Amino acid sequence: MACAGAQGQELVKIGQVGPNTGPIAHLGKDLQNGARMAIDELNAKGPSIGGKKVKFALLTEDDGGDPKQGTAVAQKLVDAKVSGVIGHLNSGTTIPASKIYFDAGIPQISPAATNPKYTQQAFNTAFRVVANDGQLGGALGRYAAAVLKVKSVAIIDDRTAYGQGVADEFGKSAKGAGVKVVATQFTTDKATDFNAILTAIKAKKPDLVFFGGMDAVAGPMLRQMKQLGINVPFMGGDGICSEGLAALAGDAMANGQVICAEAGGVEDVGRKGLDDFKEVYKKKYGIEVQTYAPYAYDAVMTMADAMQKAGSWQTDKYLPELAKIHHKGVTGEIVFDAKGDMQQGTLTLFTYSQGKRQLLVVTK
Image (cartoon, rainbow, N blue to C red):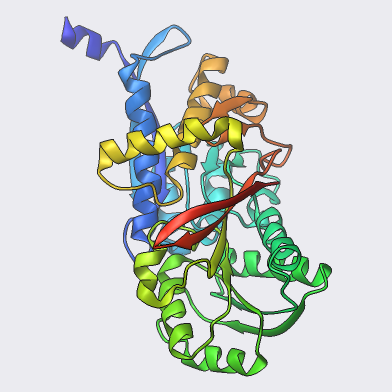
């Protein structure tokens, strides 16, 4: 009987991509764990779509945070005939991969990529469940001016699509709020020595340093800032806003020094649902959520919801349902605009105290 039941199931393949190796592998694993959690939950319910019993399978691929590797694994997932893709994490891998999925007609939901270009390509297959850089950088720029009352800032980016994008949007917003940009510097997403750029920044005496990049670079940068006596607030986007940042920075991060924004989040009414998710995650994996797991979980559930509504996992059948979906997720209400962006791009600002993330404010 069990065999017959298993044979009667249709397999629905969902691709999932992130950097599972390299300096931000901990963030890629976080994303993968969130997607896996959703798949396990869906299968535990014995799901049916359009009257047919189905089993969801997660096909995970590693793009290493590298655009070339990202397009290679995207093609691999297309060849595997997946019904949808959750990913990628970095904007620099998500954007080139999105063309491959679009050409194959495969819906893609990124739980992490924030660069506006991703949804500006007019690909009807591209969606994201997080706010974009315009919203993220804009909120941080306004916060720096209105709340922190800074008069001058120095901006560093890591030259990636994500890092440059969020840094540019922060700079625009800060300038618009009357803040002076006294220095702009850049590094790479693999750099470890920032002495030269930080020394140049120190001479300009900024009230705040903004970094567009990921936590694996931000941690060592904070250490070197302390060594050089640059004791000013340090700000960044969701790339630095992980639970792991404190460990990467060591004792270099003063309480309240770092302010960062997660490109999503829930207001008071939805906080219990997100807290419950984090508890279940910790119980399942034995570690804390870093950043992206709840968004990956919601991306899978949103895709499955669209399939249910369409009564099909065929891409051309459920894609129209995905475009008009209203899905209540653990990260809030998921509704896409005409480009595939979140209609209500919520942001959560955090700081760190005693090595732990602390919520400052939820904003839009």
